[in-house]
Length: 458
View 1 (tube, helix red, strand yellow):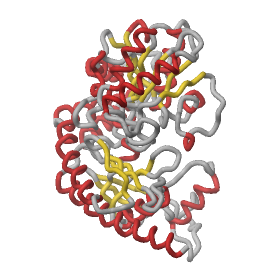
View 2 (cartoon, rainbow, N blue to C red; view 1 turned 90 degrees about the vertical axis):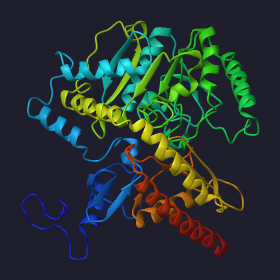
View 3 (tube, one colour; view 1 turned 90 degrees about the horizontal axis):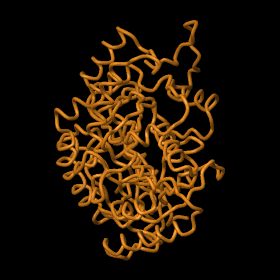
View 4 (cartoon, helix red, strand yellow; view 1 turned 135 degrees about the vertical axis):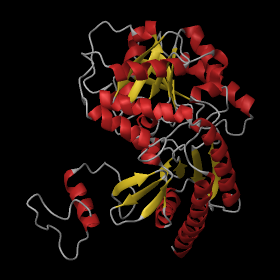
């Protein structure tokens, strides 16, 4: 039963004509910001989950192909994580970084070893936004410059500094920033001035663009920050090797490379443990940021950097909640489960089957521009069949139809949200992948037909 049926005194506060669901939505609208977006015309309250499924307050069961925005990485209610949280909660919940924290050191050691960065140091935070903030602080301090290179169509968080390097106007509410940001080409392969080029020509053109942008900078540039696969941007990615080619240019200028692995880390792409490894021809990044999936729902983020970069700050600092014993225990248990059960391999195998199944389903649909992705990180870009323009209306319609069919997915894609984002937990089974693809195929066909009919009638 939904918790909003009775008030604190035990009396009902819903009317006979108002369901608990509607009441919760109304309360949400009355007390939370207008810009705090929610999915669906009738937003749902998710009450519990198990494996790759969740249930809402009305008892409806859904196959979850979005995982709380790529955050429930292994499975809902994973026993190992639940047990680790419960046992740690029975000892102590919180101490802060002012005291030695064994779970924090344990997780930091594992992450440092897995990062690929030599002589790595790890700073734990509470979110990807905070991790990217920290990376920017390190880079600008180390290089004594507030100039940052970022990718067009990018997203790095919602803080003031993270918004300042976000190349996606749909998620950038202000042009004010403490940083001077210079945007370069390369993250979107299929549109823009280089879309018609081969992969090799595309990389060459983007490197030339980077060189040109650096010619406009004032002295030192601190860093390039880039998502190996853009998340909010619609799961777009450059050809493998682009950032290795960029790195050759960056190294000549002493510019640091920050890889934002908030959505691509921990094996989600299947082929690699980290997204940067598709671009490792010039070595590992200088700074790596992570979050989301490592906590499997607990609030964990972090930064990895070589000791000289991490230790460059000349002032004291702490983190009140970063590295909390209970979140670290959850993260360590989740990481152990991921590695021991080879969920990266599962993402490669099941993700490969899923993307081919979706490509086959979309092959005859004129409202689908592209099915793209890697591992269990798949995007379906929708367009108006008549004009070829992005179709946010179509994406919203498919999102609704998929929910009606029992499947939860996400949206993204530049400033127009015309891309369906599909990112299930990495333990997804072949049977669940087929079930989800079948629901999504039906949703695409019905929603795109409805959208087409609506345009014809108007």
